[in-house]
Every structure is written in C-alpha cells, then in structure tokens.
Length: 139
Image 1 (spheres, rainbow, N blue to C red):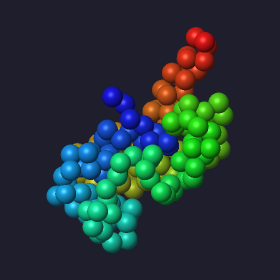
Image 2: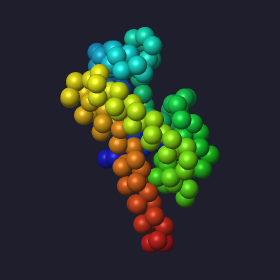
Image 3: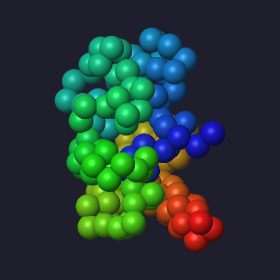
Image 4: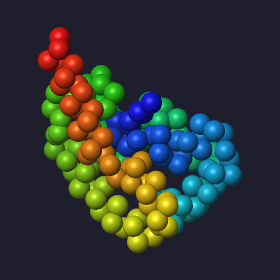
C-alpha cells in the first residue's frame, strides 16, 4: 500500500520508517550513520532519535509542508486544490540538489532506495493529484 508523506516522500522505501516499522534497532543505527554521511545530521544520533512513524507523528518539517497539509486537511500536497504551489515547487528544486549530492556519497543500492523514498516526490504527488482530480470529477 502506498504511504506518502505530506511532501511526497514514499514511506514504504524510507529506511527510517521501515526500520521503525520492523523494530530494527540495528538498522536505525545504520540509518543514523547514513544520515550523517549525506549531511542530513551533523552527528550520528541515537536510534531513538531516528525513529519515524510518518508525517502524522512528526513535529518538524524542513519545508513547512506538513503544517500546510494539516491546515488544509489533506493527506499530502497532491490532494490539494492548489497543487503544485510555490512551496512544493521549491521543495522539488531542493530535492534535486539533495539527489545530486547523495548520488556522490551513497552506494548505488542506497541511492536507489533514497531515490524511491525521497527523490521521487514530484512523480508521487503528480500521481496523487491525478487520483484526487479523478475522484473530484467522478462526484
């Protein structure tokens, strides 16, 4: 089942989310080191700090998308009448920069997983938006 974060990340491929779901503390340690290696954390944090249950439980969002999604009472940006807005377009641009940087720092296997989890936001939200518009038209 597709589980998209507010910004279009695919939780089903996110190493933090999947390690949390499987209660795999060793994998969370590996993910903490990975986040540090790609520059997403300044230090290697504890497995407890890496736990992720998805956006619905997150307190922080780099792009303030979660706050907007909650205010508009939608599950993700693709279900918003204003999609794509300026904020999500900026997020896509930043994501492309992260993807380029991560390609240089990650193994091919890790990069592919990151691509599916984090760097396909636009495609994921476009698909969600298409489904959303289809539902509106059928009503």
